Image 1 (cartoon, rainbow, N blue to C red):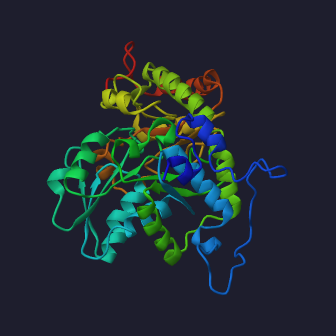
Image 2 (tube, rainbow, N blue to C red):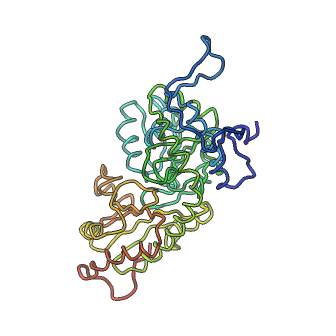
Amino acid sequence: MKPEAQNGANPLHGTSTRAVHAGETSRAPGAPVVNPIVPSSTFFTDPVPQGEVLYTRYGTNPTHTALARRLAALEGAEAALPLASGNAAVALAFLAHVRAGDHIVAQRDLYGGTLALLMRDLPQLGIETTFVEFDGFEAAIRENTRVLYMEAPVNPTLRMPDIREIARVAHTHNLPLLVDATFGTPINFRPLEYGASLVIHSATKYLGGHSDLTAGVVAGSTGIVERIREKLKSFGPVLDPYAAWLLERGIKTLDVRMERHNRNGLEISQWLESHPAVERVFYPGLPSHPDHAIASELLSGFGGMVSFVVRGGDDAALRICARLKLMSVAPSLGGVETLVSMPRFTSHAALSREERHARGIADGFIRVSIGVEDARDLIADLEQALTPELRAVAVPAVGGASPS
């Protein structure tokens, strides 16, 4: 079946066109230009159902299916499935691939919620995970290994593993590769094009883009997605039709938003790297980033996530966050407004200080989700928040930040 028949997309169309038009249901006279919200929980059927049963809990509500076609088109996937949250998407993706006695090989540096799932919850089901560096996947594979898992770019250090090598390992051992690409978005990074079996997003973030919904996404082959749908039926994290409609609306502007996120991220990271109160900046678009060369090959844009370490440790970071006026201190990311957090207290709060340091999250670490505001205004806010630290912390007279 041709891609356009599977997911409503013309493969010759660009990403922005697909974001706006994929999944349209009808252009008949009188049909709505915008796909409607269908709030019904159930739908009429014959006593003996013919074909697919529409039922909102199954994720087959028409609002869901229109959204799924749009998501699949953006990822270049056969199928997609929206879910109630990013964590639900990750959890069901694992549960569709592993059972008691199975083994997972996962990248060591991951979002804290995923780490908790792999370290605390799945072991209670008899599922073990080995955490590895980017180049350690093949050596960790066992006879009972069932899946490889990675995240790119990595939260919150923006490291960029080479998915091409990890996919080679997966294919050599006939194992599925699952990739969380929330930070990359399908505009900047499409893992399926590099050999991944399944791509996962927290759609709460960039896909929704306005900090007004909670959702998750999986996209891949029809077979894998339908296995995950069966887990959805059992565990129930269905996306509410209203949230599905908001997500579809947000996706329509994803490409144009990412263009601004990419531009602002690069400009602000360059400015931060020159500030004497900043010890280190993490942004894959900077030559100082350890994975800059790989990121330049794999990413279409470097994104809107910027992290940095300030001189003076966590006390200084707390003072800086308290001084911010335009930027907002809040967890989450990917919205049109700039959000600032300290992973020590949010995404990686469950880790010990030593565990955070081992993952590159030093004392004084601040993560910024750069929004779509004017970059000069965001820089001015950072300037007024950072500059007082020059009086509180001894810093070199010249030179700025240390290299990565």
